[in-house]
Picture 1: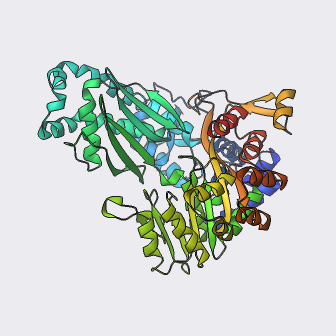
Picture 2: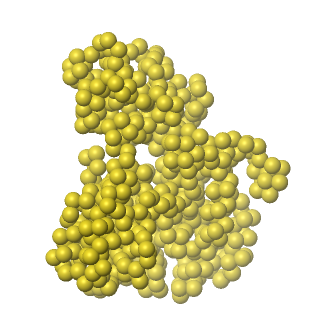
Picture 3: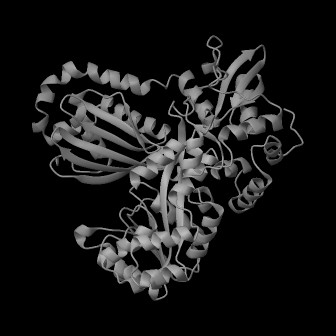
Length: 569
């Protein structure tokens, strides 16, 4: 393996994948995080995983193998699965492709892992000829080669074959005893089915799993990048056993089927823990279950990775480093508000600062921060927790959501008495947060005195870097949306994005800094229309402007932006 003298960053610049400025930004972050340059560039959204792998292939002078082009298809008649066992291949992300005489071609994610290469050499008795691939392509090829791809389909198909043995019991589902529920939930086919549903969801990057009972069938849907997709459903008669199995995992009462329940459990995948939050509700056809998948490793807790424009990031950083005041993030449920606040706390936390949060629920555990879970049933509400916080000598307080007048009043008072307070509101844009606080019952002069910044946000789907297609915008689109870049991109669909045209999501932001002009308008009780007009005259970019910029940069499509913003507003 001959290594090029050019560094990875220089190759990416030569290939016009990144700019000098982008590389400098990534190198600065690499020093702080002590990560690989390629990982930092991908996390910043400056390059795709494929871009990095192609550049590494050039740097190392080895071939690049893509799944979509059929280059990760191991030879079927050379005994490769016995030569390199599945457990070793998955642990070391190395897939045997072909064997010729004493030379074994192996696809790696990290061909610089000399220990893995040396171990393979001793294990197989062959000289190793490395090629490089992306992790997602390699895992998909492994699933296909080692026979894992159709496990879920097989388990679902097998569920229908159980019907003739379960028919009599299924007629008595409503009257099953506790012992029968536990027994059926712990049968091997049910355990296997739930495990595979979870594993497939995690593999597909789903954020939620919906299990929905209807009169003649069960629906199972995964939410991927904000959109729900159906998968083939199991047999309807297995619903009680499926729900009971999930309840056992989440430590819920399996005998209670009349009331909603909430719980959680932990699964381990590739040595990392993933939290699964479980919610059940009774419907007319049985219990519906939603499992939320909280994968810390896939959630960016660095402000640089969230999607801020440079000026917005500068304004936001200035606000969160203020000694006191109120910062609000707004948007609908699932728009990433809490993630933005977590990233802010992650940046400003310090041994010299006492930071406390009150949340419902606590989604991610942050080291060095005191996090409190709301428990209304025992009287631990947002307002009661906040009162206790003020006796705990806090510097920074985060409130999961401002829901009522009492919570809003304590947030305002805390920010006026020397504390930095961060919280969320459900409004469509940043200016509407002001009128929302007034509607709750907060006096305008208190709002103008305490507010530092309001950020509105949405999550939009990223176009798949492997298959996005360029097209020339029509003159009407250019005129209607004031688009400066006539070449836009649209989704196509490929294996990498599961034929959706999109992979992953990025946030778009509207950042409103409360300056003296706005403070004066708020304190005199100006209506929302006047405030919005002033903001527009000041040249502050709206959510639509931020979204259109992402479309011009080729990160998302115009259709995606219009659907998210127009539906919300």
